[in-house]
Image (cartoon, rainbow, N blue to C red; front, side, top):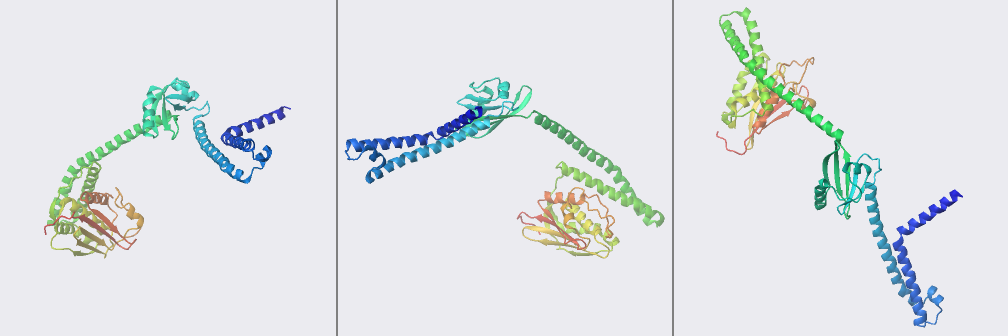
Length: 443
């Protein structure tokens, strides 16, 4: 019996819900029926149609039926359309309610605001804000709520409540007089963010200490090293003039090592200046051809040691606004790399290609070339390409800072360095491109 009553009750509730949800269309249908009955009465008793009432109700004349149908159809159409609008609105309202009505045990506060009053608030919200349903909006939320309503956009606010940090999202609902406020406990996230900021600050300080230490040590090494290198040069010249070949070999080793250390320290100092944005240019009109020829002369001894051929195609002179020392450093770095990476008997070509927009300095070799992967980190700091054990017959000495510094110097000139290579053992071409910025050059 209990189950039978339960089933009957459920059927009753189901029909009741169905009637409530479709009451507009039911009312419209009822109006149609009433209208039909009234029309039948009028036709029978006022107009004396001669037909019985039941005949007028169920079998009206054809012309009378056609007159009634448009009115009947209008009632039905209005009812259906009204029902559709109401159903749509009811679903939207239900969605809002469903979004707002989290379970009471939910750890995050949820509020719904309407007409400056709280129409819904869950348990945790009541505890945090010390307010109840139908209370007015707390003052600390009013400004953000007003802003959200005025601008019709979602606003966010962070609040400290009972030693916890909460993030509140204020969401205005379009075409409704509701505002939903969803809170989230972000205490642990805020602690993590603070910890990350503190660690980043420590790392930044350590990085700064590293940079300062490198600059300080580099400068401290530079002075005594210059003295050692200068003294080894004088000693090398003296022994060469006095034909003491037994000592020449050792002095040459000291001289070469001093030269390498001197260049390494200079590169480290330049790289540190780049980090601090302290690499400044002193630009003026300079003869680019003269700079290239001086760079070649300084490295002729190295070309002769490696038994390389050199082809030079340069105009008599070409003036351009540059920092002479820095561009000479770039040319020397790239030319030195070409020499080191070209095997004995290879060729290096140096030429200038001048146009109205830019001047290209091309340094092309017939050396070991570059793979696609090697090109990707060629200009990175310490992007030295290691070729140990590859038996390519090249010089592997170097810090890996030369091309990085060269790229930065050319960038400061608003220029670029282009690299071309078809792969291993197919040579490489480096192009130093200096833009003229459409200025007239003195030639």
